[in-house]
Image (cartoon, rainbow, N blue to C red):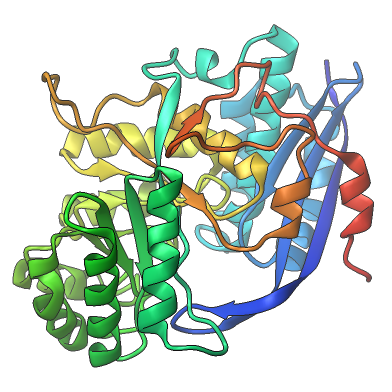
Amino acid sequence: MKIADIRTHVLEAELDQPFSYSRAWYAKRASLIVEVVTDTGIVGWGESYGPAAINAAVIKHFRPFLIGQDPMRTEWIWKELYASYRDHGQKGSVIQGLSGVDIALWDIKGKFLNQPIHALLGGWQRKSVAAYATGLYRRESGDPVDYLAEEAMGYCAEGFGAVKLKVGFGIETDRKAVEAVRQAIGPDIGLMIDANHAYDAVSAISLGRKVEHLDIGWFEEPIPPEDIAGHIEVKRALTIPLAGGECEFTRYGFRDIMVRRAIDIVQPDICSAGGLSECKKIADMAGAFGIRFAPHVWGTGIAIAAGLHLLSVLPDLTPPSLVPQEPMLEFDRTAHPVRAELLVDRIEHENGWVAVPEGPGLGVEINRSVLERYRKAA
């Protein structure tokens, strides 16, 4: 079996209602879907997180090397591509493009062997994964204190045991929002906050001290990701666990974070940090350091499926006990037309739990008509 073709699908969908996080507004959602075709007819699907058009150009440059390779050699292909672009591509779009290709190769491997990816990664430790609801963004109108509290209660009513709130809009504005959401959901629902690196260490510490009495599960990306020393400063100043890593890449980038113990919970994005091959290594490394692992997932059903397979095989976050702490799946609840329509059978939650796909490879089937419907015009 050889790789016969690699195709990229840059998809874009307009949103009916824009929403914002701390640094930008979303009026549309973009996705990059990777399709790897073999000479046997087996097709693997992957996804790259990040700037879709740029990452598609990266994969185009991978194509001459990939054509004719054995797709089962995932480790060798990863190593060769990384080494070929090491001088200029240790982080960013090169690794994001590589991530999409790697996921697609694992999908092919599973289909060829007629096994789900989690079986090839070592076998499942759980067949369903607890999910937390990511939402609670800002809207164009209305009082955030009111609509965020209402939205959070809606997630609780669906059965989610934890929610994540976007912050980074000013310390007092954030304080009011966090207090409102905590009051709305009560003391038994997990509440995490995510600033998308909107603050510096001084402001992050100030906000953290104002809300840490509200039992915050983690403070995600409080400051810019490259400021490792700043993370250490914030971590020492607060009782809230620090999380981050969606802007970091490969085991090499996460190694430095872990050695310095800059954060408590690492969050690589499988579609960005190096694919399934690399994120399994990052997860194992986190376990060796006693650091928790909670992957960032903010894509289509392909990204969700990849996250589920990886989370399925990971050990509990805490040592074996009668009340284990299991890793959680990030479950995006914001509007995303491509995510809603791309899979023939959409991945859904049931009372805040998501079943791990059992079919070969990723265990999902792509609705090809969606690739045409949302294809971005050149």
